[in-house]
Image (cartoon, rainbow, N blue to C red; front, side):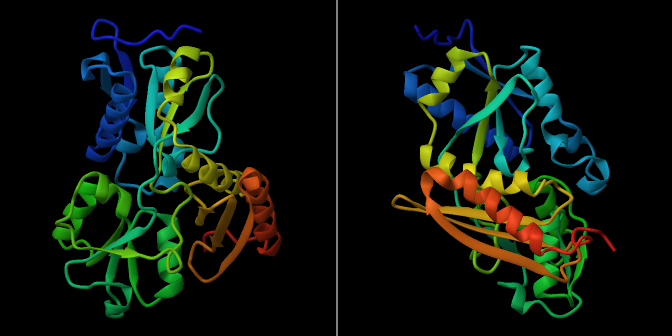
Length: 314
């Protein structure tokens, strides 16, 4: 098949959310495609699409619909032909895509760790009892309450800059962000301490950028294949299979991380009660090609150990 490359006259339309981090990810995608095919940046147009999740920032995600709130409008524009591809933070993505769309291209993964942010403390152990910590993540909330039930947790919705502003305003004394976001935005001035994954297991697919396209767009599929990072894809195949089997959403505190060592994939997973009173975790290894099977197997194993009301809010 002859590849039909975009041009300034007929650019490839790249859809994204409008936050600084989302735009940085879209620009990275454009740069990688331009370099792969020796094209000018003008051969690509970045289209900002405001999603429901961006418009409603005063309520927890579990109250307004979960992860799909950050993708529905973007995916509708792709299905209608307004954009050709969409760039997503993979930890925000539902495990299943709408009919007609596919998500099979990933850029090289960034730092997967969470970052502890506080102007007064270097880590959780330094926070006095009763300290207010802000987060909108059910996973981080549950993991925090498991380790430090003596702290107070408040809702902290908004993009990275908004959460840092709330911290400056004293809404909370500490919060969490993803190291990947801070790195991609080159925010070295933020007082961040990386939390090792054996202390706080990250969200499934944290640090990864995914590119979604129309199933029948073979030309775009061929272009995206040139920038796909296979090791990231192998890791996310296992992590997202784990999440899918758990029926994971923004309403369930779930963590998971796959790592590669030669031809072996190591997967760790964790599920928590929403109030942080209990966590169930496991670790398994397998040949890389069996990652999806092991992801499902681990999920079923953890579910078999969880009480019927494990994920219920009290």
